[in-house]
Image (cartoon, rainbow, N blue to C red):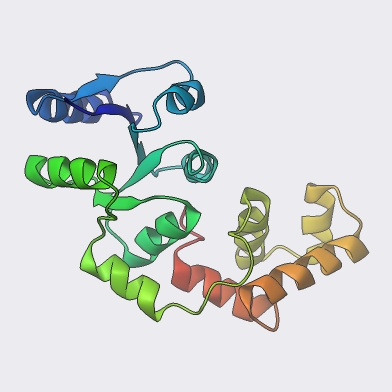
Length: 197
């Protein structure tokens, strides 16, 4: 019996090509209006998510408890792949993967195996140990703004916090990252590929 799969990508050609490959192998590609409702009713389903925007990364984090997620990455950065796994993906697939690699990844992941490029495994194995929970979208936004030169005062104003509270929140974030300050946090975020998402 075939698998049930959802493909989330903004490009129709990518979705149709992926659907053709999976359908030819006997799998069913669904196009639900609500992927969360679909996932709750199909515990054995697989969701392919192309990680192109901040919203896509957030979606993987939200789907991690509902379904098996395959992260589809444009460019194949090992740091981005490691980030995808830490965010909740069970597998990582380059967006330009062959049809054979697509099938192998989807089927193995549905069977409970993590499928990762060797470079992603190496990035995960050599990364600093993760401390605390994965970063929230808001925390990632703070790091991106700080790396772009924003002051803590401007960051606090945009986020709706007092400057004092923003300093406290950032101090907590730095502690979760296992770093001593702003510059180390920005370097850690760059090395982990978090600033490009």
